[in-house]
Image (cartoon, rainbow, N blue to C red; front, side, top):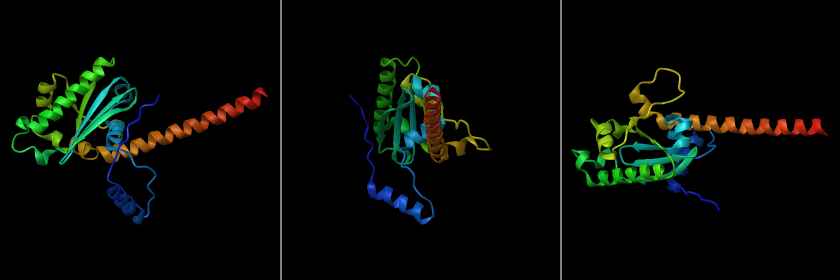
Amino acid sequence: ACEAYVITANVNHIQSICKCVNDAGYDVKDVVFTGIANGTVLIDKDARESGAILIDMGNSLTEVSVFLGGTLDNFNITGFGSRDAGDDFRSNPRFIGIISGISASIQGLKDRGSKAPSVILTGGFALADGMIEFLEEKLAHPVRMGALRGVRGDISGLDSVRLATAIGLSGYAYEKRLSSHRSAANRIHTKVVELFNN
């Protein structure tokens, strides 16, 4: 048995971005879901393994990415962001619906053995006054602002929220490159052992 998630996107939009990158003289090696890219630099490996929820709240979208067993386990993307929230996000029924979905995801992780899933917040809308406190109250669960991990240099907290996806794409590519080098090294090691044994 196999369980797979298919992430769909507007092909024309992706092709336009790829064309811009190619026109700038670069090659596109991979197209990566933002939840995976952000999770690479905002959630440590142990939390991705034991259970974590990343809430990316932007101008027009809210992405909820659920990690378990070290990989993306589930996700939900809602066309709701800061531009839709109105004067008070606390009373917006669409936002309350998103929070209900997040609460269900937390419970789902607990039901599957995650003792204390991490809930991490990122995105421009996440910086709204009182957002963390409001979410903690509604979810009855600790929520923290995402902070970039393993990044050297002088990056302010605001920049870490704005640049999380770009830095996450770099982190994702780096992890992928490391794993391909490890598998190449393992193949070479296996061949050497076989030659020695023969």
